[in-house]
Figure (cartoon, chains in turn blue, cyan):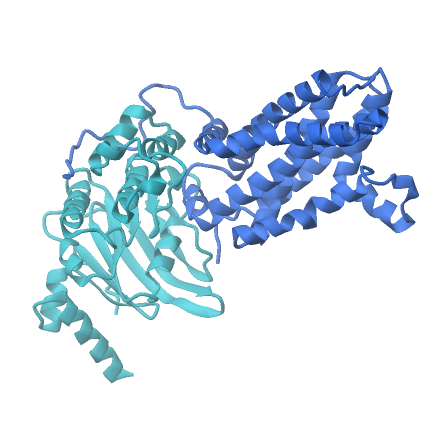
Length: 264
Length: 254
């Protein structure tokens, strides 16, 4: 094994020979997707598990199709949210602890390039996951909505981007992967319990309704309900979607703020 | 004491310093890690940053690449304040533990860093060749040995063709042959390509490969000199002895 020293190098500031430099946010997204694709087992789990879970719920609720119409639909948006939260918090924790984040901070990569790269890469994963789960649910499980499927899709992707941004933020407070996993019950489960999936919101104690009101997933669920019962897109749905979108931006800004270029 | 007028190694042209630190203080976790260090590192040279573990080598290096919070003092690299956006294209940093993605191949790792600097596949392949990893280009980084990971990490830095290359203990855990080859490469980058290298090490026998030495102990530079002058001034013929001599002299004063 020998190292050959070749000096065919040129000064550092000359532009790229090929003349084209992709924006760093796309380069970053490509790298994250490649990492994901190298882990075949995770890819299979991401794509198959939500469909299987929704099929299971459908079988459980076989006797009450109108309940499945509501629960199955909510799960269609909840799975991408949960998955994005998990994979973003773990992957980003690895970047933080593995030294690659510090290294990236010494390269031309900006914080928003990194946040955007994660959003693009995992957003694509969430879109694929939702497409498969929605196809299964609508085609074979008899899921029906009065409103259009694309609206369900848009809500699911918004929820997944919120999961990504929340995971990014939360990864700053975990020092090990064990801790990152423990943040799931703290940040994800309450939103599932309080969003109206397992118990109607209006039958909860007043203070719990107040808590529910500030959790973004509540609005994703309300938007889905609008699509389920109304053939037309309602203004309530747009408002709910705007709330979720606002939550994505706030969480992403908080997450970007935890990416420190200089540390102590 | 750090000398204010560093004697340049013979044969190198006199240039403005590539890296300079002025009265640099750094605290980490309430402890003073750097206690007012100043130095000036000439362009086109290999400077060794030597000292026992815990002496502040990594902290000093992080100041140079701009990832360390500084309490007071200044660090200037290529005429600009360390860590500015412009410098991030011209300064490359190789961390002590190989900061590469274990779930990517050698090729993908180097290709990613190449792309960040607007370089293409050909440049990535050349950098992989340069560190002798061409035979392993398609292997996942997770399956590499420690030395191979270090060399992959080095390729990720070399691919950006930096003007200043900062390496934190790059030869730890490498076998002597590869260590020798890497040092030849460092020398060559400085001599032939005019790059400035700052290399930390705690192995004294690597000190002789440097144009200049910075000896760090307890957060202060106890020497800032060429290897030859250091030997002469301490009246010793090896650098390990010179370092020990300096420490004893300091302890006598204290």
